[in-house]
Length: 229
Image 1 (tube, rainbow, N blue to C red):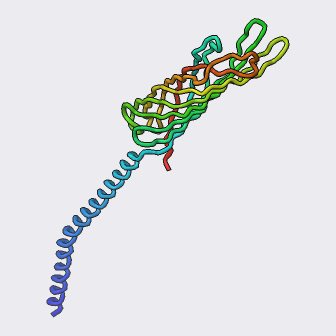
Image 2 (cartoon, rainbow, N blue to C red; image 1 turned 90 degrees about the vertical axis):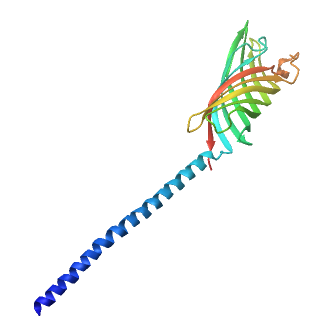
Image 3 (cartoon, helix red, strand yellow; image 1 turned 135 degrees about the vertical axis):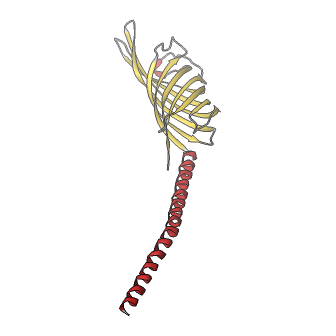
């Protein structure tokens, strides 16, 4: 009787082990496949989010630049100027934008017989930017610019008998071209612009009354960094 009970217990135990061997291989691959599928879907979702994030256009960008300027009227000021600027862009669409810039040109001194003249320049530009090749977010873009500018010349003339301080100004029409190159974190941009003075250039009897600054051209290069909110 004991042998019969022992044999019965062994048979039941053997059947349980066999059932577990048959059950585990069927369940495990199914579970692994579900996990792989879920992780794959998550990876695809993350990739799509990254692509959509890269594709979104930042509406505002800021930057800084270095610039040079040369006046058309050499008799008024024949020096080649070097300055620095702060820039901002508001993207109206993928292919155009409004740009603004504030530039300060370092003082330069010139000697005329027994007089010494020192002057510096300050310029404010507001331009419309239209892409001809590429657009605001591509690796390369070439564009035309046009708009208005306001230039101020702070002028000081020292003579043996007196010092004359004057402020010369003009409103200008800006026309030019530019290009930008993707640096991943932002864009390198370069622009060549000519500015035509709208007011007549006249030298008054008393220089302290001021004159209008004549037309000029300038070249600038800098970094443009899109702001992401």
